[in-house]
Length: 94
Image 1 (cartoon, rainbow, N blue to C red):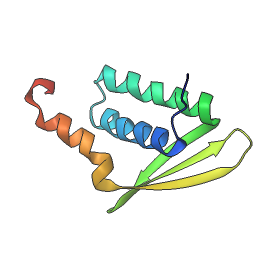
Image 2: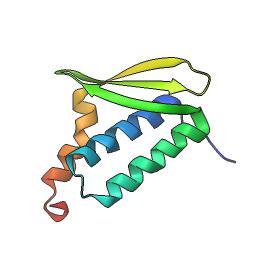
Image 3: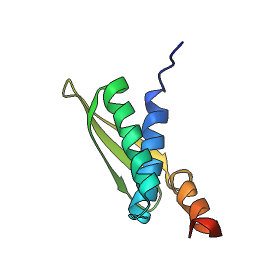
Image 4: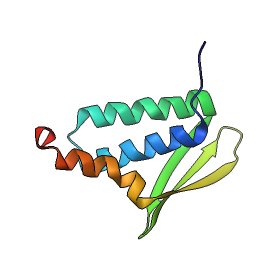
């Protein structure tokens, strides 16, 4: 049986790894993982465009579905940044 990741989870995973890749542009694993989640968003959830903005408290993701509908989701800054923070604190990744 094949399970489709919930859209909120897929967007969060894409966002978190996109932030890691932005902070570590030479990290090819982060790029590949970001691209993997982008593919899930396109194929499973019909998201054709996605971007994010950061403010002092949160990340806001804006995405456009293939039918033209535009939506936004907001995620707590600390939850999103946790993966990058954890990677940066791990000496074997630096």
